[in-house]
Length: 112
Length: 113
Image 1 (tube, each protein chain N blue to C red):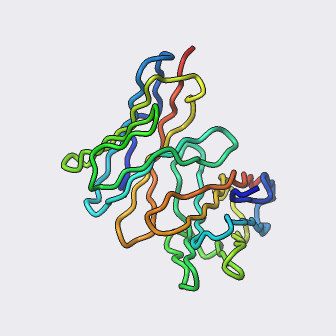
Image 2 (image 1 turned 120 degrees about the vertical axis):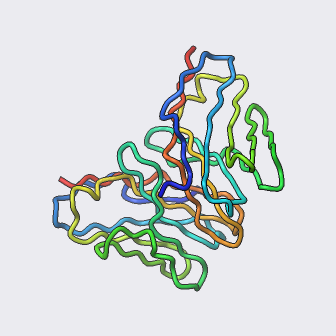
């Protein structure tokens, strides 16, 4: 039972353009969502999060959008840079719990 | 450094042998997690420790897997009688409190031959 799904295993984007990474979830109890970036041979690093009381959170070039009715969140990277090439994971947790459920990841390649 | 530290970074073992993986969390973080990432898969939850509470072991795939956390700090994940399907990157993470992001170590890549 995959509660957090990233249906695109890979994405290629031209440098300077927008990268949009998508994530869907099934558990309506999830109320905290995170995006992580992972380079090869390194652990995932935290990028940005959003609480369910918001529908948008922005940090520099990274913006996360949450659509609760659709159980969908997305990460926008603008402008995309070659250094953004990595695997991106979305994760979710339900309030009062501690278990973070991760998606399977999307490999982003930003072409110079 | 101030990050989560894992050792060894790589481990190759023969099928049937036992292995121990170590995690040193960030000082002051209250909770510690183990995840694993098999080839082409996402991050699979294994076990969670929070303070003095009983650990949540619901993600451990079999009774060959066990973990302990001594003194509320360092954790060891033990895999007994390793199998080839245990080959994966084992990631440890710690967190300051509920609703905070996880901070991951660089993982231990386990290869069972």
